[in-house]
Image (cartoon, rainbow, N blue to C red):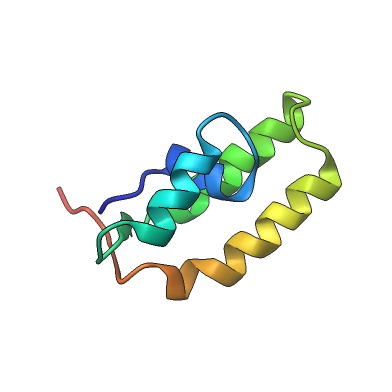
Length: 83
């Protein structure tokens, strides 16, 4: 199963679609993967929510800390797209 940035952010912030993402992450098919570019994109998406006022600075820091801890072991494979 491939995870894009918008789906991964829902794992770390409570918003519409969060419960579905958490269920798929827990019970979805293996392997679960994403592209290497998703790593910086998640930080950008989380920071944008702070700028937009949807998330507080403490919520942002908590989400970032959880993301950093969960990123490496969470995905069976990550890849970089080459053109």
